[in-house]
Length: 348
Image (cartoon, rainbow, N blue to C red; front, side):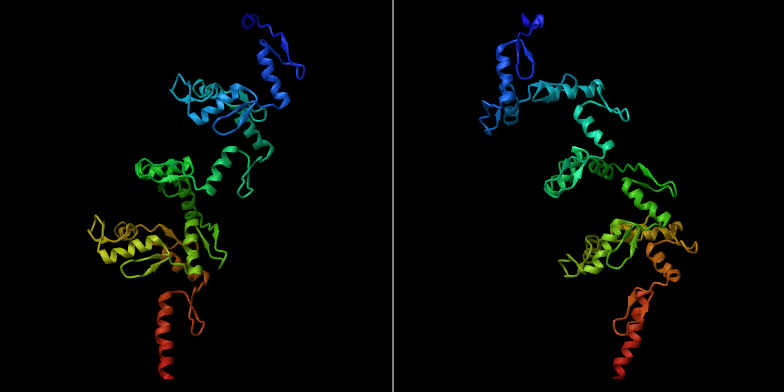
C-alpha cells in the first residue's frame, strides 16, 4: 500500500534518504559501509546491490531485455533505453547555460561544457595526449590499437572513423559534394578540396624538414621525402626494378604486361595510366590548369609549370657530382655530364 500512499517510514541515519521497505534501506546502507556482498560469477566483480549485479551480468550473457518501441533496438538496462528513446522523441532536457545548446544525455552536456572551460579530462593511457570529449579519446585510441570498426560494404575496406567511411563510400557512388568556387572542379572529400585550393592561392603549407622545399599537398610532401631516405620498398617481381611509390610500380609493371587500358575517345590512343591519359586529353581540349604565379603563363601538366618557375626563382636543383655545377633541368645536367666530363676522361 505504501507504493500508492507514498509513505516511506524507513530512513537512513547517514544521509536522510527514505524508503518504503526495510529491505531497500538495508541494501542502501551498503553504499555507506562500502560492503559489496553481491559477486559476479563470471569475473569476480562485486556490487553493493543485487540489482546492479543483475545488470552487470548481462554484459557476460548478452541479454538485452529492454526494447525500443520505435526501432526495435534492445538494451541491457532501462536507463539506456530511456536515454535512447529521447532520440525518437527529440527530447533534449539537458541545456548548456553558456550557449543554449541542448542534449539528450547529461554526460553529453558534461562533455560539451569542457569546450567552454577548455578542460581536457580524457587522457590517453598510451601517449598522455588529452581530449575535451570522451568520444575524441575513443577515436584517438584506435591509432594505438589499430581498430577499424567501420567497414565499407562495397569493397570491404575498414576505417577508424565513421566520417572517413562516409567520405570513402562516395568513391563508389561517384558523388562529389565539394566544389571549387574558382574553377568548378568537384571532389568526394573536403580535404581534397582544401588541398586543391592551394593550387589557386599558390600557398604551399607543407615544408620538407630536410631541404626546406614546400608543397601544396601533404601527400606530395610524403612522396618527396623518399628522395632523402632513398627508400624504394616497391620492387617489380619481373625485373627487380624498385620504386619509392606503389603507384609507380603498378604503372611500370604494365610495360611487361603490355596492358594499356586507358583509351582516348577522341583519337583512340591508349595509355598505361589514367594520369597519362588525362595529360594527353589536354592536347585535344587545350586545357592548361597550371598557371605561373609570376608571369601568367599556363601549362597543361604540373611538371612543366614546375620547370618553368625555375626561370623566375633561379632554382637549380640538379648538381653535377664531378664538378659541383648546378642546372635547372635534368636534361641539361645529363648533356653536361656526357659531353664535358666524358671529354675529360678521354683526354687523361
